[in-house]
Image 1 (cartoon, rainbow, N blue to C red):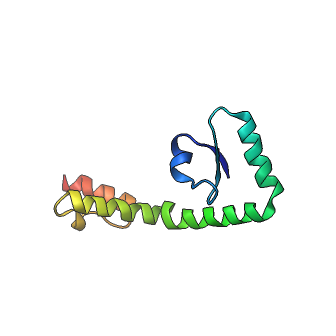
Image 2 (cartoon, rainbow, N blue to C red):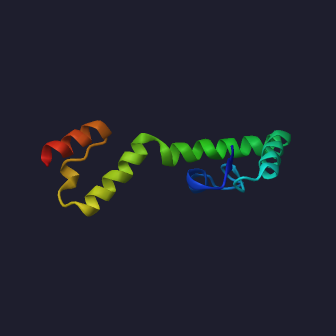
Length: 98
C-alpha cells in the first residue's frame, strides 16, 4: 500500500514494512512509491504480507475491543464486570449500568 504520510495512514503504516509513505501533496513521490511497488514484486509481496499480519494483530474488532476493555478496567472501578468481548453487548451493558 502506498499512502500519504499524514493523519491516519502515517499512524497506521510502518514505512517500508507494512506500506510505503510519501510526502503529502507530492505527486512525484506518489508516482515513485506506486512505480516502486509495481516494479518490485518481491517487495510488494513482503509488504502485503506484513500489512496483513499487522491488521490481524492490531486492527480486527476483537483486538480493538480487548484494548478498550483494558482501558476501561484501568480507568473505571468495576468496569471488568460490565464490558464484554462483544462491542454492542458491552455498550448496552454500560448504558444499563449508568
